Amino acid sequence: MVDFEKFMEEHWGRLRRHAYCMMGSILDAEDVAQETMLRAVEIGPALDNIENLSEWVHIAATEAALGLLRKCRPLPLEEFDLPDLIQTTGAGGDPGSHPVDGNGDWPGATLDFLFPLQYMKPEQRAVLVLRDGFEDGDRMAATALDMTIQEIFQIADEAEKLRAQVRKRWGSTVPFVALRDDEKSEKVFNRFLEIFQMRDAVLLQQVLWKNAEMILAPDRFTGEDFVATECAAMAKGMGTKLQFIPVWLNGCRGVLISDWREISSEWNRMALALVLCNEREVRAIKWCLDGHILRKIQVDELDQASPPLSTDSLPPD
Image 1 (cartoon, rainbow, N blue to C red):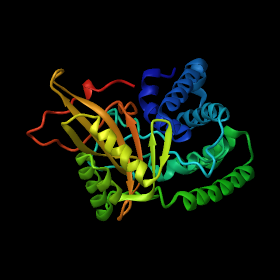
Image 2 (cartoon, rainbow, N blue to C red; image 1 turned 90 degrees about the horizontal axis):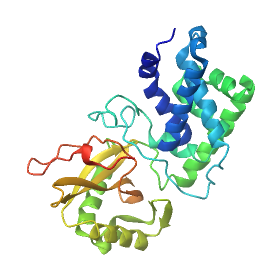
Image 3 (tube, rainbow, N blue to C red; image 1 turned 180 degrees about the vertical axis):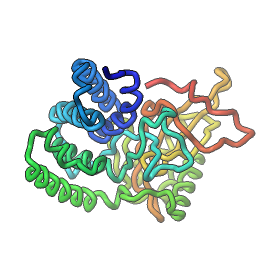
Image 4 (cartoon, rainbow, N blue to C red; image 1 turned 90 degrees about the vertical axis):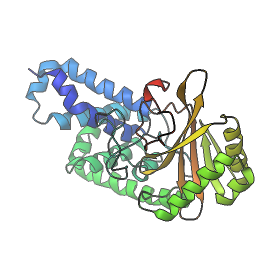
């Protein structure tokens, strides 16, 4: 008889990571993971007859994700967006950080892998995600999609061609490499934060690419003047004691901006931004007011003179 508590403990983290890669959305990934576990509970004792439970979990999650993905269209190539952002460990993440929930729930998903998936059909996403996670991903994809291996190969070829088109179209905006060891882009990032703290739109224009992309909540904004003005306006409206703390999100540099509130005597998270930059300028920004996309966050050590940031006081999802 399968021990469901042990079953959950063993598979939950990898299941959520797989669901997140399939969906590009944290909330949708949670739905997929929950549906998969409910399916496991429903078949109950039959799990004892499954030789490879990990494989079964990922195929079942893929089938659940496909059901949701088929209800919405892929992102058109001419449109720009970014998937939900979570702090990650593993490839492209900060080696010194801890997993988001402290238990390995969201490891190893990087922006360079996730970004092109938004533009793909559900079947293409499924094939690439399973290939990325398993040596035998093609056979698993054939099972999940009820196709032959030859058909899976054809889908994979089409997906790779589309991925190349996405990178060609948006490669000047989204760096398709992790920024961890790029000292020049790190200097651009730090300069951006320094100017942002000054609330100076004119100075911000100096570090922004003329076609810088900005996503604020569900909206997309483009243009150097507008992006610089909007960033400065946000900074001015967020308080006088802003604290800028570097974080790593999907292999790229992000920043947690906090504001000390004297009345409540606690740190309040005001916004979470992912700043994509190269060695010369900032190319794209995703801004999430209230930072609702993270449950917990591992950050660099604060200055000893600063009050500690309490993740317990952050607003829930």
